Amino acid sequence: MTVGERVPVELDIDGPSAPPRANGELVFSEPWESRVFGVTVALYERGAFPWDEFRDELVAAIGRWERESPDSSDYRYYECWLEALQSLLARHRIVGPDQLTDRVSVLRARPAGHDHHHIDEPES
Amino acid sequence: MTADRRPNDYPDAALRAEALESLLVERGLIDPKVVDGLISRYATDVGPMNGAKVVARAWSDPEYKARLLADGTSAIGELGFSGPQGEHIVVLENTPDVHHVVVCTLCSCYPWPVLGLPPDWYKDPAYRARMVREPRTLLAEMGLALDDDVQIKVWDSSSEVRYFVLPERPEGTDDMPEDELATLVTRDAMVGVGRVAEPVE
Image 1 (tube, rainbow over the protein chains, first blue to last red):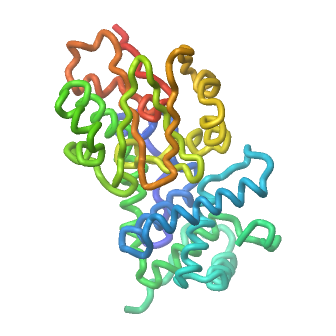
Image 2: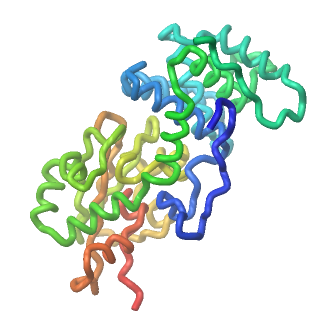
Image 3: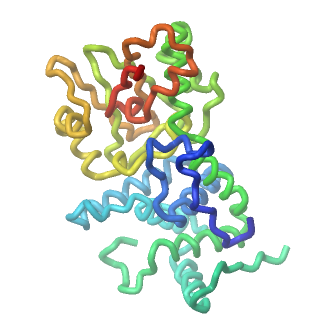
């Protein structure tokens, strides 16, 4: 799978390969949620940070959401997760807010209707 | 960045997630294939069936059950299940008198190696708040009516420990082999918001 392609979200829900996690529900509601989950665990497994540090950021992000959003019906757990990862990477000076903003601008400038984008691999 | 300091054009999560991943990949900090593998592992391979096998083994083998209750992580590891969020698993045995239920009030911690990733209701603010405040009422709303003389113990996972409930073995399963027992065990029973139903003849 190349950079930028998305994992397939079509799953065989009822057939023999039905995901065992289920009891009927999917664990990710959108592809980006699975990406940010996988990215976080990959960083943790290569030792970029101890899990406790991520959990502390996650607790803080969920706490902020709960203080700022009186209506719990629009709660998005993986949005808090993403905020936590952003904070942690900024604190470790791995990816700062400005770098993230710049990259978002580049992605936004892609032509509309791009099918799947390919980000150039760095020269090695 | 907190919500109140966000500019109006704060990009949506999908775009920020993509930007973050692309920066990390460029710097060689993550390999997209590793990320793909982790997603596939946690979306399809690791799930409540792991926990169900642990429960069925404990029901079938008293010595295994004793090891499981003494050291959850180690006994679960015997069946080949281990990994992140499984480093300190404490197993709680439900009995006719005591019912255990698990919540994580602060951040939705969950024992991934035995249950996979948490379902939406487990992460929901209402579940996290109410299971501590009014467990009997909430359990009844979730379909588990417990008699008043059953003591309910609520375990909050917000530390290094991850809790895992060993449900009661249902009636009518004395002759059932371990692999069939495993098919009866549900995720809800292993979180403590349900019980394992008797097999349908």
